[in-house]
Image (cartoon, rainbow, N blue to C red; front, side, top):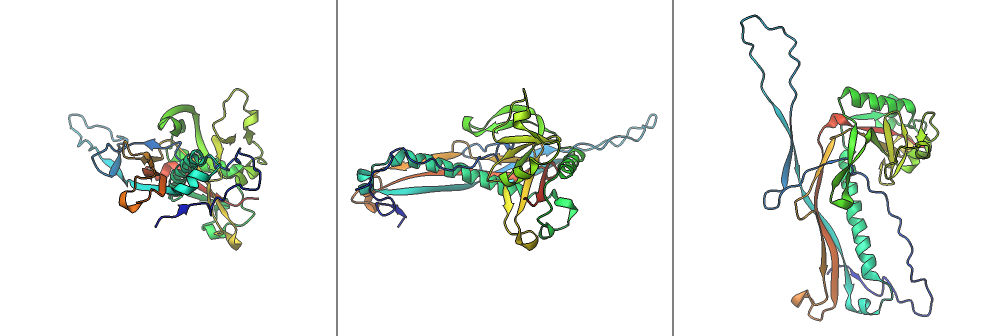
Length: 320
């Protein structure tokens, strides 16, 4: 039997007055899909996608011998497979609840489910990105468990991360995905992107050389952007990766992600990226013979995958 939303969970507002304008919900900023390659799988094919690239050739530095044909080179390619999974959830209402509640519950429910979907996709992407093999631990310690409370983000750490990305030939990001318009892209000024937690922002703002967004002048800030340091523009979200209790003395370790272009990708099955599914009263057949239950849910197909480990760096540090 599914969980039911009834008068027990949301009792009537009898014998008390309350404001019909409901309280605003606290919603994180969802950013972890914004800088991904988006490649969907056509419906009716498979659930597995291969992100593919052809590898560069080594420089031909050996002089040619007059009259002698060189051996030549061969093309090679690299495939990064990813398997799309399904995710979803729903809420069940009783008929009595629907006929007696004073709140615009169906409208509220649609928004709540939409936020849950976006949060799910964001966290799935974040957790894949946080598993990247290119990492930099504050002050050069070898293990996460050795990060102490004094090892905070710094200008030197950010500059070192930028140097690593450049040495790895990671290009700067010049576009971002806009999920609200069907995952179309829009241009951004060339930069590396850092995804940080608000607790990290507190420390960044005290670093000499950090430029806050209000100091940008004519430069337009990105959604959630708090400022820039070196060649990194920092985007703030409470969904940023935190390794809870895994530092020295069980402190929290913050995983700031610094991204180059084309470092990771996401995929869905075309036509089934996300479905809004409503089963009205009476749609349950013999499983609901008295038309007592209605459901509203969502179902999505999704996968995130790192495409080039060298073009994404995880900077681990403590916070104040």
